[in-house]
Length: 397
Image 1 (cartoon, rainbow, N blue to C red):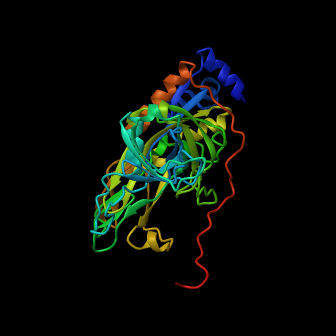
Image 2 (tube, rainbow, N blue to C red; image 1 turned 180 degrees about the vertical axis):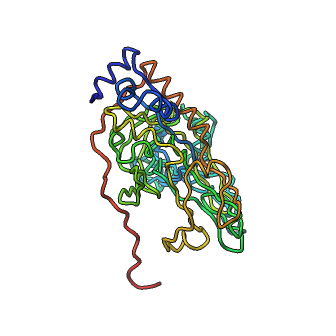
Image 3 (cartoon, rainbow, N blue to C red; image 1 turned 60 degrees about the vertical axis):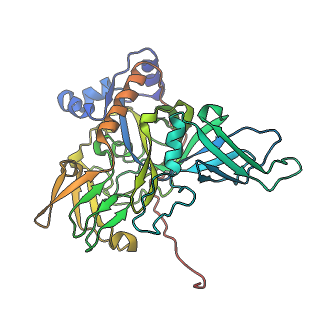
């Protein structure tokens, strides 16, 4: 039994498509059987919500009178990249505010940065633009200061080089002092663990071999209709996988884009990581078309079937030793406590399962209403790609 994208989209347009969330489909297949369910189910919705540092946006301000070629810019005192056209800038999620002391007095607080600027933009707040220029014959203005909101911009386009990591590390700290990381604060002597994944709801864990999610796939990005525009940076598919094909470590990634003017503030949140920096928490939903029974089977993956590796972030992670302290499945991690070497260790998640489930439901509603059609990828993500390290060469300075 094989379906096509066209057949599924026709059912969506007619309001007859059967759409289930990645949570619902597990019990549905258990009850109906794989072959019968594959005939009935057309789409499974997957989602995740959590910090995604490799995110940002292009903004176009339009031209002032007289015109200006902005060469330096700050939005709410957060520096934007100006190495593009005259009034285009790129705001990165992890950019710090001007004069933020960072970790000068460790641990820094990082109260506001690029992720918060992006949150404020989507929320419709007024922000301050301050720009400088060296001046040219055709762009004579040298300085500008003004207030604006997202509606004043010609374009506000989120362009994220790396989102939706396919599995990831569980972080722990084996040293004798507290450490501050992008996975949160880790107590000394392995007294807590943190992780960041929606587990059985997560898009690439439901499509481990990238059979339906690829370049050109339509996505739900914080409420806006977006797309996968490339493989994500650090995409690495040549990794250890379980018997079910699901990676047990960080692997595939997606590069995503969408119109920020269509986004919902609830799913775009600036975040501060004490002692580390700022980031942006995003909600992403991706529909998986049920083209055949095997694709459906992969969407029934359960938390207990997804394994993650525990890494010591005090030594093994920064020094790239490759050492793994333990392995747990997501059912164990989501319980809030695991047994490590005979001791109970609390576990917390930086990813919200409840938010991810809400996104699955919102995307499901859009598909059932006929307002969200599926798109066939124009290019599959690489299946045999590793990740190169940065080798330091040349004279030591």
